[in-house]
Image (cartoon, rainbow, N blue to C red; front, side, top):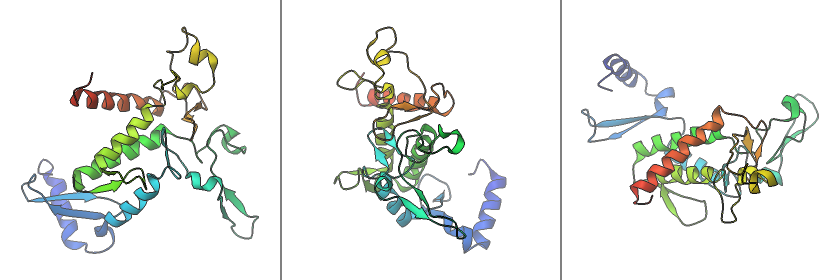
Length: 237
């Protein structure tokens, strides 16, 4: 912050004159890394709220799938969320892991269950930043009910590991992103050609939607690179 004196001045003025409202979203703790002995975190959830969020986010019966984080909890597969507004007929939202079951947005786009790389990327980055503030002593159970405790950095790496599995061959030599497409799974001329699908099945990891979504789905390259660097750091090649 010392490199941004103008921002630092306004920030400190804000802290002095705002004790309520937005001030509750700025956390601070002692730190030896900064000259003033303090580290700040601008956040929406406080520590207790973050733990409650992660309990659901890291639950394999809710958001955490074998291949990343779902866009809607799997809980709603058997327990749809229902609501009515202004006297209209009751509406429901249920977990749909693949293509949409209705015609909204053309019927080929679904944010109610599948794995989207853009959502996962933002969550992984957020967890890394939270870890920089909370440190190695702040741990959560991952997956939920597993008894395995992880730092937020380790949680981010676990999500990253699951995301990379979308494109890597499993023990049977299959890439989950190719689904049951025999040509892409078995044909030596096709099996190493990877498509950046728009989104992925929330349970099986099969690529769905547009097969050439080279925007946010290309973010998987960052995740693969991070896992490769981690392997090198741990002495693996």
